[in-house]
Image 1 (tube, rainbow, N blue to C red):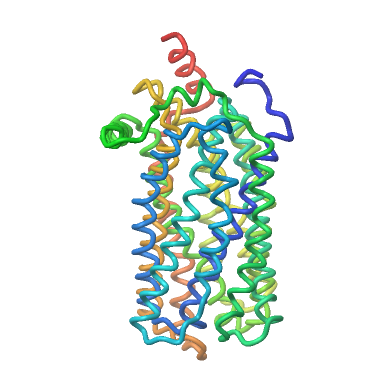
Image 2 (cartoon, one colour):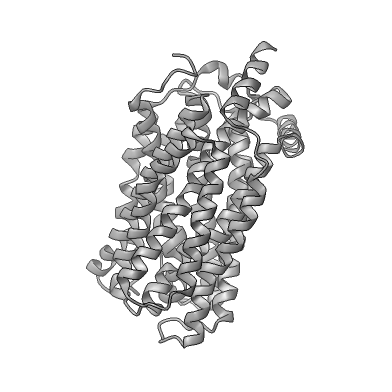
Length: 454
């Protein structure tokens, strides 16, 4: 089959379904881990934020190493697909370990949280970077990639909705939240659900050998130097990738504030802790519903124009959310739903844009470096999320947040400011960055044709 022919539905959905499995872990890390640290483990909010920062910095470093190894991997199953089978069980174990609740002092809790999160993030990257890199191998058509990214986000937020809906309920069913095994068992049960989705991705995808051979192979000290040089060349010459790099940092740093504060907002601002298992998954359901919509819009306009449209919707929604004084759960659900529907566009679009920069890299440098491109982007995302966690910990302390206590009016106002005003700044910065993004469908096809002629 030609790289430009329409993909089989089974291939497209088989690949995209893998992100259902990944987001069981990722959304738990993103939405549940911070409240777990502060309200269950008993870790100080600033120390919890520091855990996210240090673990993300490690993650960014590890991603570049994992990406280089994946690009150089050669097996009868391909370069990337074997990781989905052989490394995924370790990810489930790491997920369970991260939810242990040892009865230690603050220093011990900090060290345990940091090491267990480093283990979890490393295991996650060993599986996720090869998975993401597959998108550049499966199709080289920009519109197909937009469709793939939309379906990927559909499955991603399905997985996120599952873990945020079922894991708190499993914890309640299992008994005492402070018990050392309660969260571990719940994590293990939801983690096991992920494995069949990784196997489906393995079974329904293939890797064209000629594309694998456009990457270097062989692991050695000299190879390490070659990979560092390749990464430097990408940073210097791949302008579209660097724009996406900036947008990933901004979107992950700013827009994630809303999601990470959602449990606090529902629990303390609305005063409805009983609605956490409903409203948090609802935000992800809105992500799920609108991911294919934004992919459809990108196919009919361009990825750049679609990003700017989403900026406009986000800005309006955040403004209304911040100035609304209502504590009605239905009003909150509508506003959170609009924000979630707009913000999913950024995730759809940068996952759709990234594979295009692989061909841009081949056009500029002569080599694809698929996994390195995704590792580079993952580094940006991890760095931003680490900064996000550290900043959130500082901001929560700054507004006077006290775990498991009624919050003052000033603290509640500060919580809304964190959720709305920080992302508003991100909306403006990301619009400036994406304004000059050059790779529309026509330009992508031109540079691929030029590369083929060489």
